[in-house]
Image (cartoon, rainbow, N blue to C red):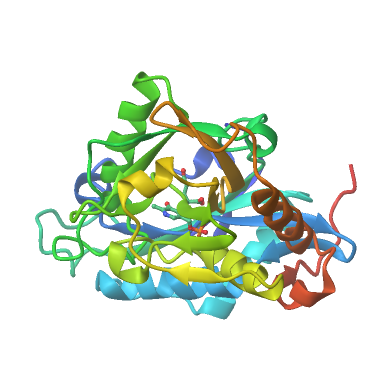
Length: 311
Ligand code: PPE
C-alpha cells in the first residue's frame, strides 16, 4: 500500500510507522471493531469528502450495535479527518476510520476494554483493477453465504464480520475471478464481497432489499437517487441467482470499488460482455457527483477547508 506521513491515533497525529497497537488488543483477537471506507476527490472547490456525514453516521451506528461508545463526537472525527488530509497534503485519498476494543482485558466480555479510534488516509487506486471501470469484471457466485442477520449484523460494518467476505474473495480469486457474489441464507442474491449489486432487466434497475443481509451502502443510496433522478424505475426486491445470468446489465457499487460493471458471471457473458448503456450512464453521473461536477449532488460533498497541494 502507499504510505503517507501521518495517522490520527486516539486524538494525536502520529507518524505512519508509529501508529502501532499491542498484540493483546481485544479487536485483534475477537474482531471487536467497526470501521468505515470513505473517499475524498479533487473537485472545482478543492478536495471534497464524499458523503462524509453519512459515513460517520454509519460508523456511530455500527459502534452502537456492538456496544462501543465512541469517545469523540461525530464533529470531532470529521474535523480530525479534515486536518489529517491537509497535514498529509492529499488531494485525493481513501479514508479509513476504525473504532476498536483496545488493550487491557481479554475474554469475550468486552465492555471493560477501552474503545480506541484511529483514522488513516492514503491514496488507493482502482480497487478491482484499472481496466475494471471501463470493461467490467468477471465475477463468481460464492459457495459461501452472506452472514445471516440472526447470527451477526449485516447492517454494521464490523471488522470480525469481514471474515465472511475474506473467504468469498479468496475462493473467487483462486478460481480466477475478480470478485465474489454472495447469496443470502435463502439463496437470493445479496452482494459482492465489498460492494452492493444491481441488475438491469428490460430497462428496470433491480437491487436486493435491506432484508437480504446487505450492508446499507452509502453509494447504493447515491445510485438509487441518481437512477430515479434520471427517470429509471429502481426496484428493491429479492433476486434469484438465474436473474444474474439473464440480466441485460449487472454492476456493483462501493466506496473502494466505485461503480464497476460486471461483464461475466459464472462464465456466462452478461449481455454482450461489455458494459451496457444504463450502467455507463449511471457511471458517468455518479463520477460527476463524486468529483463535484453535478450541482444536483453538491450537498454530498464535504469540502476540506484547508488548501492542499495541487501536484
Ligand atoms: N457491502 C459490503 C460487504 C462492503 O464491504 C461495502 C463497502 C459495500 C457493500 C458498499 O458500501 P459503501 O461503500 O457504503 O457504498 N466496502 C468497503 C471496504 C472495502 C475493503 O476492501 O476494505 C469500501 O468499499 O470501502
